[in-house]
Image (cartoon, rainbow, N blue to C red):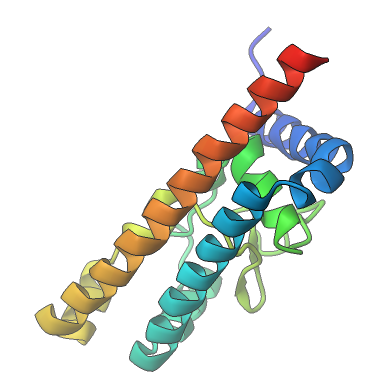
Length: 171
């Protein structure tokens, strides 16, 4: 029987929570993983800083709360897998148990996205209204910062996958 979108998401959240409980101490003892986690966190901070300067976060939060079908549409959360959700747990994020804003992404709250480490689409998509408001220079600056964040996240995800594979083989 095929799982529904909600069931698949709950499965990924459950897997992430189990991985977190099982491996958070071991991950904390791996200097390479800690370095990558720190680098990713710094890259996220740079993105958030520029987004605040450009007022992107506020515009996106307002849209997500008002516009069903905007970029934070219900269903986009299906792009999140257990490893990306685990990274959020490692960064201290709480993964919600229920959808707070009906008609929006499962991870959208009253103040915007509840996650730090985000899916590619959630970062990279700039709606036409936002593009018009920002202009080409600001868009170029933002895409450069976003690219560094996405690269840092990808490196961490790959390293975690290798870590899990290695630890499963040693078990």
